Image (cartoon, rainbow, N blue to C red; front, side):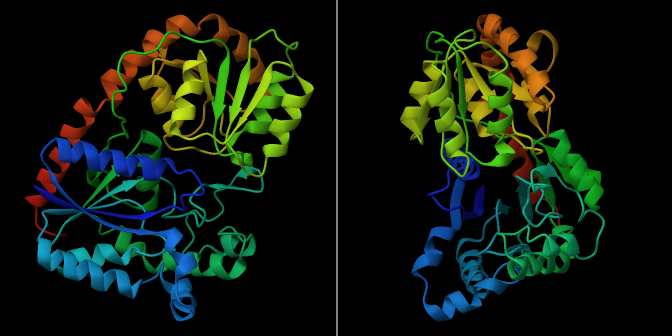
Amino acid sequence: MKVVVAHNRYREAIPSGENVIVDTEIGQLREAGVEVVPFQRSSDSIASMSAGRKALLPISPVYGADAQRDLSALLRAERPDVLHLHNPYPLLSPWVIRTAHAHGVPVVQTVHNYRQVCSSGLYFRDGHNCHDCRGKLLGWPAIRNRCYRGSAAQSAIMATTLAVHRPTWRSVDRYIALTDKIAAHLVDYGVPADRIVIKPNGLPDPGAPAPLGDGFLYGARLSPEKGLGLLLDAWRQHPDGSLGTLRIAGDGELRPLAEQAAAERSDVLYLGPLDRAGMVAARQASAVVIAVPTWEDVLPTVILEAMSSGRAVLGTAVGGIPYMVGTGAEAAGWLAAPDPVALAAALPAARVGAAAAAVAARARYQQHFHPDVLTPRLISIYTEMSRQPIA
C-alpha cells in the first residue's frame, strides 16, 4: 500500500493540533508497513516568497498552479494507491482532488473543520456561533463580516473558492469524519452518507499514567472561541483556593485575561506558552484537564492528550466533545453547557471525582483512540478505495 498524504501545514508560530495529528498519523502508518509519500506545503513559506508569487497568492485557494504541477509529477513517479488530503488551504487548493482523479488516484479526505461551508472553518464569528453561509451558493455573509483573516477581499476569494469547488468536494471518494457532528455537517452539505466513515484522530500511547497531581490545567490558544473568558468567569464564582490550582498555558489575544487572573488570585497560575515537554509536565502536575470552547470544536487534541495520559476532562457540551468524553460509567469526565453558571457548578464535582474519572479516561483512550484501534481502520479505508473505480 502506497499513500500520498497531502497537507498545507499551518504556521508553526500558531500551535496546530492538525499539524500534530498529520505527523502522528504518518508515523503510525509507516509503523504499520504503509509506504507514505508526504506532499506538503507550509504557510510559513509565504513570508519568503518572491513579490511575483505573493501577487498570485490570493488565487491559490482556487487553483494553485505550482501545487498541481508538482503533484502531477509526484503521482506519475510514485503511482500511489490513494491520496489522503487534510488541509488544502491556501497553497494546495481543493484542485488537488481533481488532479489526483485525473491520474486515476482515489481521494480520501479527513475533515478537521467546517471549511466546505464556512470561510473561517469554525462556524464562529464575533464571539458567537454562526451558520449564516449554510445553504448559500456564495457566502455573502462571510464577505460582509470579513470572516477570513479579517479581510473582505480575502473573504471574497475564499467564498468564491468554496462556491467553485462545491462539485470538487462532492467528488471526494471517501470522507473521514472525526465525529458524528462532522458526519452530519457533510450530509447537510450534500455528501451521500455512504461516502462518509466516522474515524476519530488518535495519539501514540504515552505509557502508564503518572500519579495524579492536583487542580486543573487549561491549555489552549488564548482566543475568544477557546473559552478562557468563560472559564475565568466560572472560576471566580468559587472562593480563592477552594478548588486547588488552575494552571493556564498558552498565548494569544486574551493573554491579558490570564495575566490579570493570576495577579488577582493565588489559585491561578499563568504558565505562558509551553512546548510539548512543558505541557506534559503541566498535565502531570494536574488532576483534571479543562477544554471549554464555545465554538463547535471538532476533536480537540488537548482532550486526546489528557485521556491518553490518564487525566479526566471537564469540557463544554459542544461540537465533538460529547463524542470524545462519552457518557455514563465509561465517561472520561464531565460536560457542562457553555455558560459560567453551569461550568461553575461542574468544577467542584470534577475536583472530587478526578481519581475515578482518570481511570475511565485512560480506558476510553485505549478502547477508542489508541493507534492499535485506529490505524487498522484507516488502512482498511485505503484498501477499499484502492479497489474501487473513480466516481
